[in-house]
Length: 127
Image 1 (cartoon, rainbow, N blue to C red):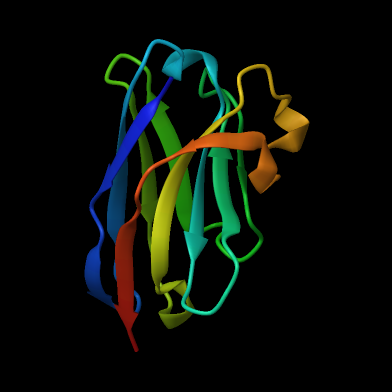
Image 2 (image 1 turned 180 degrees about the vertical axis):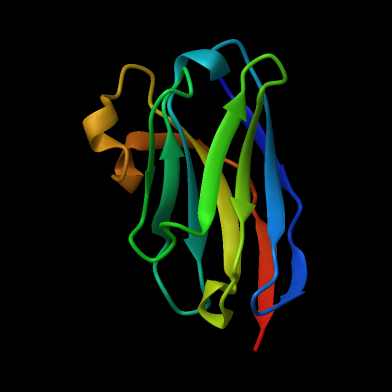
């Protein structure tokens, strides 16, 4: 099993930056791809970014490409999401998730391929 705890959310002005962290516990963390998702009020949870289990591959939603960076430190069992040039539409709860063990990289954007989730951290971007 994997337990996930997000931190780093808060209130920031448009154009500002935040760095989210996701601390993981469990034996399989370094063996699975990891993802960040977000959910705004009244909207479905959506894919934001993913990083492969070794950290060698990353992928982003079109809406955040060039502004967000996902990374991981397997020695620290932590995944990060650096968010720059934040926009008001980025206001949402941000959730860290662990891909199902053995799930292929090609399914990184599929929310149904993630079976462990953190409780989320709120990011509010003021216009």
